Image (cartoon, rainbow, N blue to C red; front, top):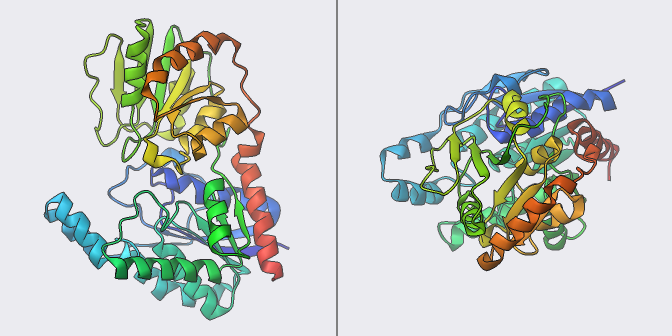
Amino acid sequence: MSRTVLMVAFHYPPSGAVASQRPHKFARYLPESGWAPVVVARRPDPRQPLDPSFGGPPAPRLRLSPLEPSRLLGLFPSAFAAALRRAVFVPDEECGWMASLAATLPALVRRLRPDVIWANSVPPGSLVAAAWAARRARVPFVADFHNEWTRNMYYRPASRLHDALHRRLEGFVVRSARAVTTLNPLHTEDLRSRFPGTPAETIENGFDPVDYELGPGGRGLVFTYAGAIYGHQGPGPFLRALAGTGRRDVAVRIVGDRFAAVRPGDWPFPVEVRGHVPHRELGREFSRSSAFFLCLEPSAARQLPAKLYEYLRAGRPTFAIVPRGGAAERWLARTGAGTAVPSEEPERWPGALERFIEELPRYRAPDGAAFHRRALAGRLAGVLDRAAAGP
């Protein structure tokens, strides 16, 4: 007989946010391991694109439509609004969502009597509300950290008092959890170090082969970047590296720039920029590609972008300009899915890229079976099993 897991997910299809894939794929494949998911999700955030191709069963049992006062700050200049959000809204600007969860989860838990409560940390308020509800009902809680909290590169507390409050809430969540999962080995190591005895485990992001089909490769040499461009990642270093090789026989495609952050510019090679592309169309986009590229600034050493797993699924290698010793470099070395060159050493970029291009005909894609969403859901089922069994 299957057991029930109550799953809390801010992003869930048809939201086109990349964070919606993780809870959705877990929910889709957990029944194969004896777990029946009941999903509580937010109605799609209007700031995110809609993508029906993310859809499919199971649908959420409940969708919440919280009122978010932080949205009113969009009327102010961006720098002032950002500072005010950090000062007023803790642990994050989605305080309406956290309040809705806090009001809704206790009654839902009493009615469903789930064996485990699972929550994803986008945003961290989801973890706080779920941990509180689980403690109150004495139900095992599993915290899934999609991103780091107080170790996140974007973490900017408004004051020492805010920093102390964030750290207290983070500690409350971790200590309330029967198990903690992350998608980044560096994050797992950090949590084990800061919270000794915490049963923390890494369940990385992945891909689902049924999402799209791949066709034969296109003509010519084409490098592709897929996904949104923001924060500490963008195509600039790769474009400069390619210009430094002196090559003119390479085309560059940037797919999914929904923030219009990139202009093609004046380069000695063609650069194509497109906005959001539905997930099911990635097969067509990837089939036209010879290879992929990724660029992270030195400050993003702990970042492990989800796009790397889709690149792996496409069977093409990735040329990565990423921080030395960081999560992305370690992942590429471990999987053999591409080549990394330190973002701290721009003088090495053109030569490394030229060698990468010369080696393309000899590339053999590694086996990515361990990153299939079905396999990852099976690993989560093991975590849920242990959490339900007790300490």
